[in-house]
Image (cartoon, rainbow, N blue to C red; front, side):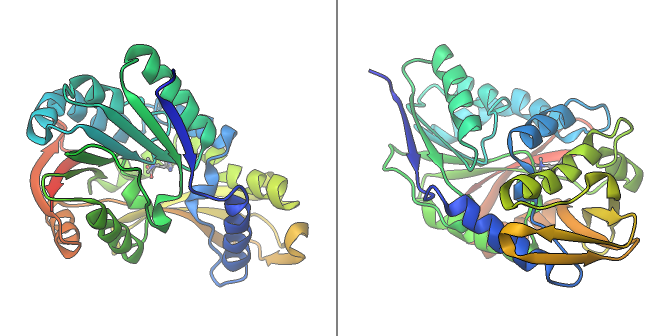
Length: 319
Ligand code: AVJ
């Protein structure tokens, strides 16, 4: 009998409906925007994996360093029997944590990508066949319904992905995480930290153009899913540091006056030469800010760990 269960809390067409709504809304407002979650089809997920190996892109290595150093401590503090990982993706770094968690019985990876979930679950079960894996295909930014699993529970949200949410979205998200937790449960949160502008910009505008290809991939997704006719070569990758908001902003800049048709939406969108469309924010944090955002959601920051070079932080919070 297989201990692997896959539950879809998103209706089959929810993804399509959400993409249509996001594209219609984002391309008809000024300035134009597209939400970053649409980067991650199979090609976009592969490009992101490639980004994590680039010399310029430090967050993955920095977070892994912290997890390797602190996994035993996290396991000891939380004594968790259930690990819920939001936006689990390939779950590669999480392995360090899982391996250290002696009481762990159930792993609940939550992701919008079914292929990422089954791939990760298979690798994991090969190594730890006694683990119950209950994968959830779900969009965790739209509320969370979790299976009844044994406590204490540890909710992990790694990679600095919380930085891809706008401040109001972060507040709503942290509040929904708070609602999931009972006394004795904990949240493990990965946050990239404010640092030197040039290091930040290089991490999002690498020398080999992988991040540029990743950014433009959202246009390919729209072309395929919504019968669009974007020419990715008619856009340039832009990464800028917004020092007021303390976030990196990725944009796509139209290199010419052009009209793009999205046939599935009956939409024609004009771009002026030089016009920039925001495709992602990646907020960078400071300890005080993280503590305050957690507190506003009813969570108390109990531990704060950074890598040796202070580039990235993992925090552990309780209700
Ligand atoms: C998905 C949050 C880990 O914001 O750093 C990488 C996505 N975007 N390069 C980030 C991303 C451009 C990434 N995370």
